[in-house]
Amino acid sequence: MAVRAHSPQDELYGQLDIPAYCWYIIDTPEYQRMRYIPQLGCASLIFPGATHTRFEHCLGCAHLANVFLNHITRAQPEIEIKEEYWQSVIIAALSHDLGHGPWSHCFEAVAHQYSETWDHEEMSCSILKHIIKKYNVPIKSEIIDAACCFIRGEEYKGFPRWLSRIVANHDCDIDLDKFDYLARDMNRSLCIARFEYDRLIYHCHVVEDQLAWKISEISTIERMFFNRNDMHQRVYQHRVNQA
Image (cartoon, rainbow, N blue to C red; front, side, top):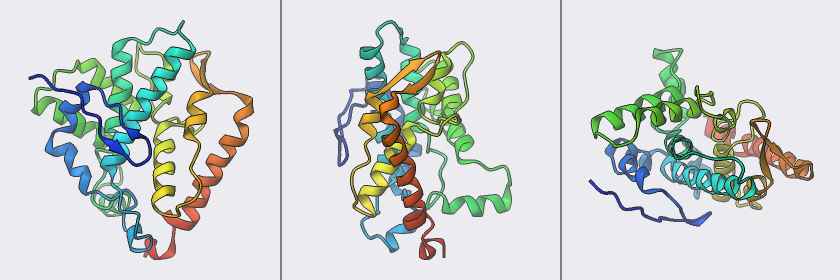
């Protein structure tokens, strides 16, 4: 079955660049359920515009992954990014929140009553593998296994280390997941200045098999962490939202 690439329109990035092979995953009931999972849980009761979902967040992350890999290819042509590397990163970005339950993080407190080890990232990997098997998706198992490692921020044997830091970076906490959710959450809740994710993509390079940023971007990185802390205080941990 041939799948044609689509270019959805996004409020943050405009036309999204989603590769054709992603639509085998997107066009399934398991993936489409994310259209009904609010990104910010019950926060829309306080911020009426915060009705965005995990679905658009994941599409946005996949788009940023494509943008990021294109940037590395142009900026550092000596780094040969194989097709399987490319696909595994984009699928990880596309699928990293598949495992969220109703009302996103609000569900975790309920899940932990039944299983202390429940984790939405592990569940994302389980659902992704379920989709691949159930619908006979024509993507190599090695690519899916690598994508699952990248969802967890772990290295995959035989793949360059820096690939595992793109979607979830446990080394320095600067990753594409954060780029999208900060930009999207700030836009839909506080309506404050745009987060400069594009600068952090443009000024990122691969150095000694890890991601590195120009020293001139220290202030941009500081603003990113300030914005995250600000969002936690004013939105994510809002007393009414917690109640």
